Length: 401
Image (cartoon, rainbow, N blue to C red):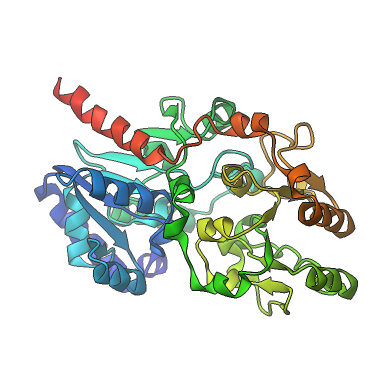
């Protein structure tokens, strides 16, 4: 009993028991799709874009968004977007009927999505393969799992049956170059296809990415620092750039530049006191949509996060700031950007600031080449959702032929 209580809230467990009991009696309905994302917390990523595309293109498909965030639920209801709370009877029923389940981050995106006949799972990848991501900590730490942990895992799988990335009917990536590394993260039987990333289609419709927050910066150049997490949220947050350097801050003021610090969402729990002023502003806890931040930024600074691949679609200056030994002390990466940089590589704040100056004073000299963009993106057109939709619908046709 104690182990059961430890795996989730009592409500989630009770609903899990109910879901297990009723699912065998509910057959899946063709063209009934449910979408979830980001641990059930947000309406975003590829699930948001693909759902909105499907709703606008084919009214015969019944689309429902599943979330565990009541604020998101209420906002979607106000905007007449069909949604249900994951921890509810209506949510359980909506999931039970679905023949397609879409998720973006991992198992915790959606609960009670049991494997059933005539059901497919689609993992709309959160990011492209660069740093070693899926299951990397378990492999790196190589620790023995204790018996209670194994029991908890079995109970969680039984009550919630969390979909794995390897359950996906196919997995997409953005280029042939990336596909060879994407293959390393999935079982051999999982199909890897170059279709582009659904989460980035919205970058081609910037009018849909307005956020009042950026209105205050209309007359300024925005440099955004978006590093990846450290130790999957258990490490130290990345440094707040230039926060203690008055000389660099003076230059930023004189040139109407602000630096936004957006730590990875996994790091929020590690941020106790964020430091900000008028030119170096920590926006991590605002939880701004990443694509919205990108479309409003003039320069991107990142490290081992694959956000830089998304950023290439905008053809704006890119800087890599490698301040630690991520290869040996953290998750590591599949290939070393030092061998073929996508943007300027910097390994100290002074070096980084010199690159920033060039981005502001001579931005054209810091733009990514067409060869770099083409290396990481076969398609630069905002039609990734269409290609995913067409591929999924073609599977229906193959099954009926």
